[in-house]
Amino acid sequence: MKSIDVKSIYNEKYFLEAVDGYKEFSEFDGSFGSLFERYKRNVNILELRPQHKYLEIGCGRGEICIWHGLNGGIAKGVDYSADAINLAKSKAKILDSSVEFVEASFGTLLEPDNYYDRILASEFIEHISKIEGVDFFKVAYSALKPGGKLLVYTMPNTLQRCYGYPIMRIWAFIKGKRLPKKQDDTLSEHYKLYHLNEQNYFELKHSALRVGFKRFVVGYDIESVKNKSGIKNLILKFIEITPLRHLLFSNLYLLAEK
Image 1 (tube, rainbow, N blue to C red):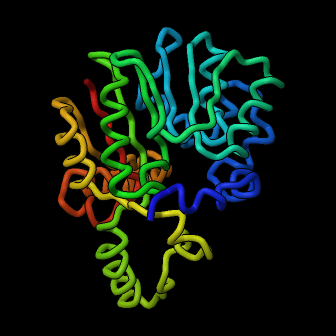
Image 2 (image 1 turned 90 degrees about the horizontal axis):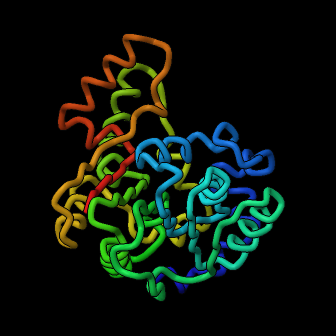
């Protein structure tokens, strides 16, 4: 199955009621502070600056593109969902952001080689097939300038899903607690249609190497699960440098420099 086969489920309702950040979208005023927290993390990890030419593949409602345009940058957002692009264009018009939005599949993009300083694909690669995933990395690598950076953010982590969560359930049971048999994000009726190509640390690393990236890091963005408890944060930091991270963390990212 390819992403084009399930295109119809990516409708306006999906982007306004299901996609992360939908609650913040109605209040988004183009400022960095009004961005959904995940989007802020993506901007910071990618080190997106006003002087950068920016491409977002699978841009959805287009918040980061709109913010970047208002911040003085050149931005292009691409999504194959007509409803997503319409939402993005409407918001950009309201906020008077000079940004380009294109309804297209990444596979049909005719972007110039060595053009973009920054490319983002956030919560995207899990929604396309494995074959399409190979093509996506080729497109992104070709479109990046030398020295340009690609950020791929994705969840879940298949190793956590298949092995880590069952272990967590057993541990919780020993402590007298019960965790649901299935994790919350798998309960949607369309879950298997939404997620065609879930990733893990080793798959992302292989994809980066296969396409030609020499400088990259694959990691787990744990900032979103930290809290004010110093002890908990120390535990998370310890796990982050051990093989346990592959079983316990889900927020995967690949940051690669061409």
